[in-house]
Image (cartoon, rainbow, N blue to C red):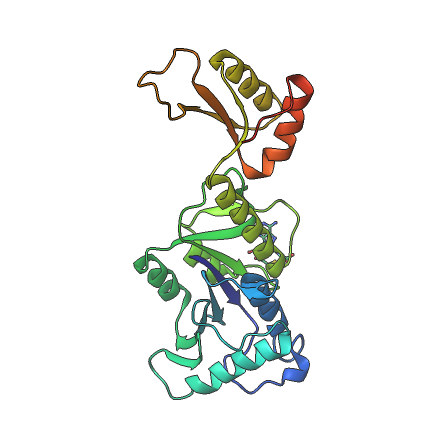
Length: 270
Ligand SMILES: C[S@@+](CC[C@H](N)C(=O)[O-])C[C@H]1O[C@@H](n2cnc3c(N)ncnc32)[C@H](O)[C@@H]1O
C-alpha cells in the first residue's frame, strides 16, 4: 500500500464553501483535488493500492481508500464536491464516518494521524526539497509520504514531523501533485526492476557468459547468470556444456541484445 498524506493549511473544515472558487475562497482545495487525481488515476483505471489522507487545518482528516473508492472523477470540481459532502457528513459526529464509498471523515490532529499510521504498520516519510535523494534512500515497504499543500510545512507540522526521514525529489520546488506523480513513477520502476528478469541470450561456455555479463555491466546494465541444465535422456551432465542464460531487467532487454549483437553474435533468446 502507498499512502500520501496531504497537510492542507487553508482549505476549509466546514462545508460552507463554493465549488465555483476552489483556488480562492475555498482555500486552494484545487491543489488537494489535483493531488488526489495524481495519487489515484491511471489511464482508464484507478490505483487500488493507494490511500490519500488529507488533514485540513490540523483538525479534520479525510481519507480516500483506493480499494473502496467510487464516484471519483478526473475533474477537480467533482472531487471538491466529494470533500464538501464529507464535511457535511462530519457535522455533529464524533467518530469516523463514511461519506461516500471509500471516503472517510473524522476529527484528528497531525500527531494522531502519525500515531495511526504507525499502528497500521505504515512507514511515514516526509517529502521535502532538502531531504536525502529519493533514489539513494531505501524507501520502506508500506510508505506514507507526507506533503504540504501550496504552502511550506508550518512550524507545528515541522515539530510533529521532526523525527521522520526526509527524502527529496531534487532541489527544484515542485507542486504537490507533481511530486506524487514522480513518486509513483519511481516506485513503479523499482517494483518492475524487482520483478522477474528476462533472458537476453544464452551461451554454452561459462567463461563467455562472464565476458558478456562484464560487458553489459560496463554499459550500466546489471545482468545475472543462470545455469540451466536441459532435461536429457542421459543421467549425466557433461562438464562445460551446461547452458548459461544471461538475464537482464525487462527495460534493459533491447539495449542488452544490441550490445551483445555488436560485440559477439546475434543473441539467442529461446
Ligand atoms: C508546493 S510545495 C510547498 C511550497 C514550496 N516549498 C514553495 O513555497 O515553493 C508542496 C510540497 O511538495 C513537496 N515538494 C515540493 N518540491 C519537492 C521536492 N523537490 N522534493 C521533495 N518534495 C517536494 C513538499 O512536501 C512540499 O511541501
